[in-house]
Length: 261
Image (tube, rainbow, N blue to C red):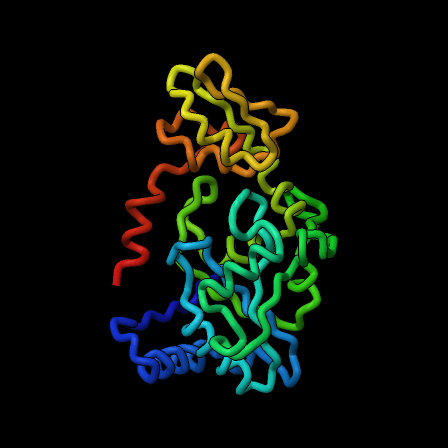
């Protein structure tokens, strides 16, 4: 099975030009036929971590919301809380981050919600009967929606490799408990020879599972739930993922290509 892929230049940020481009793609892809009157439609985005620019801008999302409204559906813009320590780990910080990045009703033209609630417990257990899981914990705001429009930015991930719509949904709509399930075989280990004892991994571990002993990091596997934060912040790359191989091509090299204009 193959998919049609549409490309459009966004070298100009003129609002009328952007609106015209997005409208053309929306119609060409047949999205107008995907929504019914009064469909509660989740527009799944990434609100971005506090202070960064790696997310689809709220102005673009607002144009997509307009197009969905024209079909008679009722869109809302949403994402679920993260497992890792950061600016999107709970509903309050997450909404404040969204506001910081101009995801507000007056800009996007729709309500802003956090799909799994204040602390990531607004969930629905869904039976999937797949290879790794029989049931998964998904954000209720996703499961209860009548339709979902996925708005993804090109992204590299230390475990998943190059991510887009599939990761944006499959992992992004998992609750904190669901995300923990997905990371459960990460099982990071410290290469004691490479570790420089800087302590950055310990400082960013949400479970305080890492301690610095005799100038080296040690991970308590009983406390660790595999969020992968330590892999990101380990400058000498002394922490390795045992359960899942870490792909090498990602991060800086591909990141710059993805966001080149």
